[in-house]
Image (tube, rainbow, N blue to C red; front, side, top):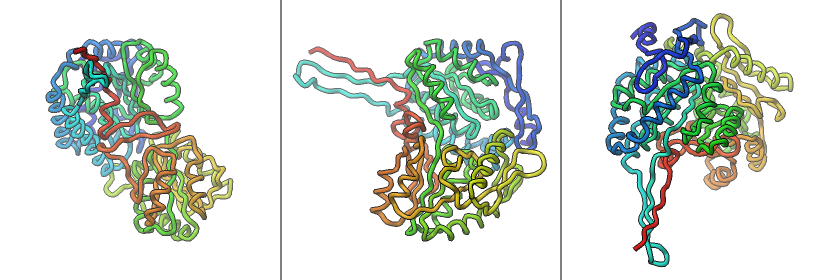
Length: 484
């Protein structure tokens, strides 16, 4: 399809109770192409009443959906997985238009989203329980797992399809109904996914999609309503804290995948070729707009100059442009605020004495572009040492000892992922065990995998998504005491 036709093919109303409906008062908002600033289309702009209507639909569908055979839920997910693969090209183009990432990355994300559906289609039929003789022999214990109930899902703009798959997949597998609110910058991918799931056989009311420019106003009434039983959120730590406070009112079960500040540690015994390749993956995936992106590079003194030289060489050669153009690696950031934040962080580091080896500025012309950038001699008190950059900037600091590297890596309120490069097995185990992170990339720059438990510690979140434990976030354990 052409750019125009992939946008036109998406329903742009709210999806509630299996029907596409306008927002209250017919309100809409514009979706823009971050590479050009051009308006792609208008999408329904929900009000609080629309959110409650979506929750009504999810509540009404919950009992019947929970009784649906696990195999039936599994087959729906499997069909959705196959449809995503069949339509990868069109869905990737749609994502690139609304989010900006290069087409090659968008294709990868569609496949990644599909893998969550395939994984959880297999988990749906493996929800287990237990049978146990009471210790005194007088009775039996039966343990079963049941759906949590209606869930509220909030997804970010940086991975608009994959983060939907990561939450929707286990919810469907477990037998939970949903209201999902995608980010206002990238609603089209989620609306397209809702249509695909409907085509795959998902019953009306199981998935409801609410797009809005007033996320707080729409979500808070649903959270405080009391009928939803779970909230799953991916986004900033600041917003996550607010949502946790709101969820406390009705004691909603929560899953939180929040901010990151990932250290990338390179020891002098590392395979430098592998470390550079991993650095490019960990830093430049999604143009650096990822919670798993390497945010701080700590390189041991013996290889620091060579690492900086090689990384600068790679970063300076990356083609920049609109994500639809062949070969482009550095697409636009999501909006003007994102560019302003990256600009501010780089300027702060430079004012503190950091050296800019490549990049370090915006790009003239339309769109929200920032050059791929490498900094060295970054002071430990620079703002980018504590704040997520969320852009194509690699700040390098030097360390001497293993203890120094661990201390620097852990000197953050976040703990989502850490990356370590070393060929010393004992060091690898010591450092991995001492890093305060929910995930470790050991000699590899990508940790995300639907078959692995994704999540962080400290202020990077609560719970895990993916892996064998991912479905447990959507299940309650029930114990039945049986007298004999």
